[in-house]
Length: 79
Image (cartoon, rainbow, N blue to C red; front, side, top):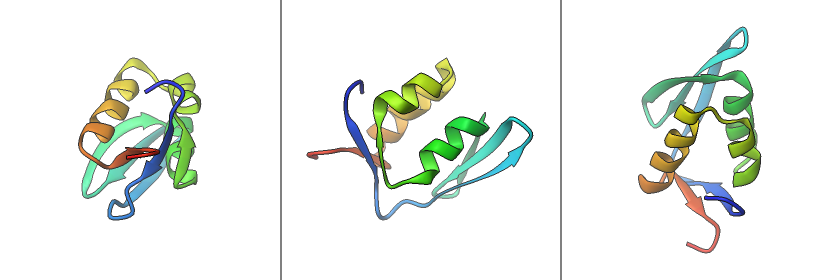
């Protein structure tokens, strides 16, 4: 995933709620616990540089990124 532009799938819905420095991230009806910074960065724009997210992400959040790409909820630019 390094050095790629990621684009949220237009058919997917991303949202989050915050609780201090933590957040609950909702994507297409599923939810998971993340850091506030990670959720805000992921939901802020439709296109994001993967390196920006990776720099913020915990190990679990990096696994989530991979799952989102594999599930088609995040698309690599050029797909």
